[in-house]
Length: 309
Image 1 (cartoon, rainbow, N blue to C red):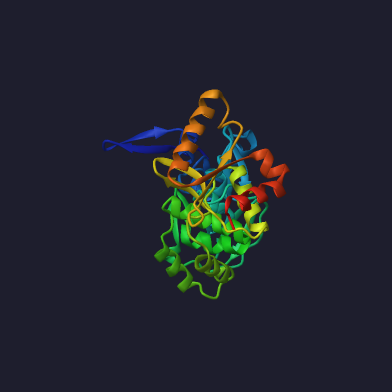
Image 2: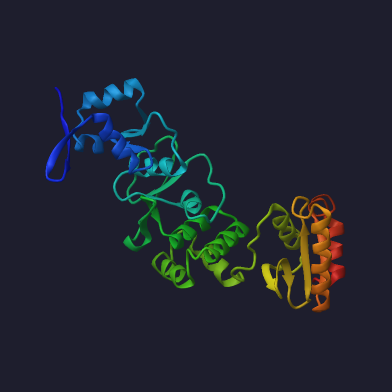
């Protein structure tokens, strides 16, 4: 059976090719199309199967396809997983954390939350839980849990430090205000993760642990392991943004990353900066990646001698 496709322009119908219809559908959805969408657009089952055979459509999940000539982006992979999981599904947990920019990695499977039990599919990690309407929205065209609900879900799968970092990132990016988190906790007070998120909100100085490098993260870990108080990270002192600040002890630690502090001009600027901070009655300590990684005991001793702890 031959099917003719039309698009309406300026009051008249213009014939279109089936492949143009497929491209148009995929362009709106990160290169992802569904069998239901293709059928609604007028393609017959034989036409869909023909394109699957020729590789212009590639099956991602049952009933969900990628346009064969392009690789799927993260957004396309996430959307495909949600579409394959049925109506009311939403990207969640680590995958939603990545989509919101709260965490850096998510694992090999896409996390999707559904209200009712569904058959497991390869590449999708399904979570069964209710999602309130106010906890689900569209981001880049993808159904996803809100950032506050995402933090609740992340509290189930991250350790305490990881959750604190996700919280700080959410606040830094303006993704979740404390009232949003309080409302989410009130609606989900008995759900897994609620207690961990509540502890983090009550016991953590929000915004205090946001770090921007592996070296900075290493230094925070050394403080935790050795009973030293955690510093405030990425704070402003005078006109400078500094890496670590213990305000009560008036101690500043600058992380001497090799790339950032290479060259005579940069070293001269660092000396001038340290002198200015010293004049403001701060004690400045510089610690390199090698010292923090390979000389942890000496690094901790230097922190203690500077007045930290």
